Length: 123
Ligand code: HEC
Ligand code: HEC
Ligand code: HEC
Image (cartoon, rainbow, N blue to C red; front, top):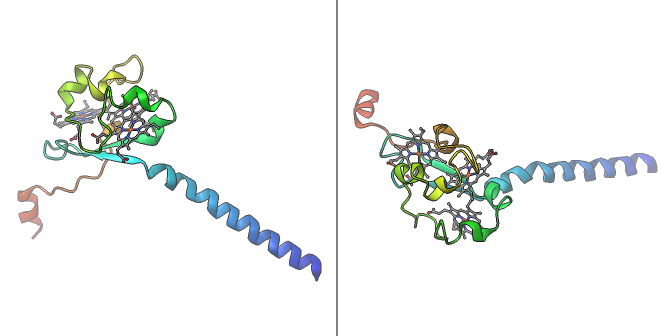
């Protein structure tokens, strides 16, 4: 009987540890930032910037504040500047990181704008 109780409490411990481990990816995604000043209006899905992914690879100083001001939405980033090597393009230039050719790697958000004509059609 005693053994059964020990086994049961051990199982409970393992299960609670497992559910803790399962929560971790969600915590990493907590730091994802959405950049959507222009993207959706221009017909592209919003940009999801994986902040944590970059933060574990670079010191804060690499980006803040030489490349990006440290306030969400405070940087006037657009595609032309990126292709010219500014903002994300300081690294996403085919040298430090992949070039900005793979649109959906950055434009990975969910579009919320419904085109007016489509809305009329759905009604
Ligand atoms: C690869 C570049 C990069 C690195 C490295 C980086 N950040 Fe950022 N950070 C950004 C970008 C891009 C934004 C969003 C700016 C915008 O929305 O205009 C941002 C936004 C922020 C913000 C405001 C949004 C928020 O979540 O509150 C804070 C605070 C911040 N960073 C802190 C840090 C700290 C602390 C580090 C180092 C541990 C760091 N960043 C490393 C690129 C970077
Ligand atoms: C300081 C350099 C630097 C800057 C600035 C930077 N990145 Fe990156 N980024 C990287 C590197 C390095 C990788 C990893 C490349 C690889 O795996 O080949 C990466 C990977 C990514 C990934 C893929 C993440 C994954 O899960 O594989 C995305 C999305 C991304 N960057 C978006 C952006 C966006 C959007 C910006 C601008 C707001 C930006 N990056 C600015 C260096 C940078
Ligand atoms: C390295 C990440 C990255 C990649 C790859 C990327 N973009 Fe972007 N793009 C951005 C960011 C950041 C913005 C500014 C987001 C905002 O605030 O609206 C943007 C904005 C835009 C805009 C809004 C209008 C404008 O002039 O800026 C369009 C359209 C666009 N991108 C198209 C594309 C297309 C098409 C591709 C593939 C050929 C692409 N993007 C690849 C990061 C990226």
